[in-house]
View (cartoon, rainbow, N blue to C red):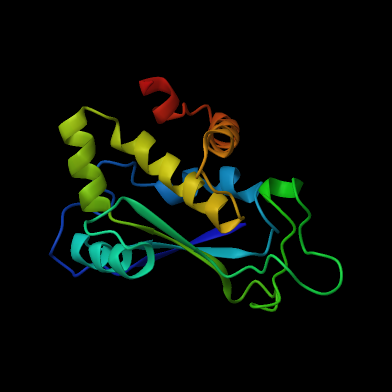
Length: 180
């Protein structure tokens, strides 16, 4: 899987591009996401402003406020013929087919949308490392694209374990597990 950065924030309306994350952040995450999904699958990493994220959260999750990350998967959980990924393979939560995108690598198989200004402000208020938080959000979002959910304790633990394993590939800690 590879990331394609898409910046949809209004120019001049925010702060630094990564709001505290390293300047080479997308490149740093290459090895982590490279081990997920099919190699030529692309996931758009979309940066939006707080209002756009609030609107997306309201429309797709029923939330009333801004949130840090939302993920949208364009993969099918049912299909004909063998799946492109089977459950447990390269981070897939279940069998996945890329028929909606043709599996060509040209069309994204999902989008991970992040509100950098919101994330940076929350990190500043809580005393968290923004770089670690951004890394986690990207890995977390990509796992959602691959069908992972955290709607009960067992699934949350399984997803956090996989997040920690992926982050450890770069020697990075899992910030949520460190805070608990």
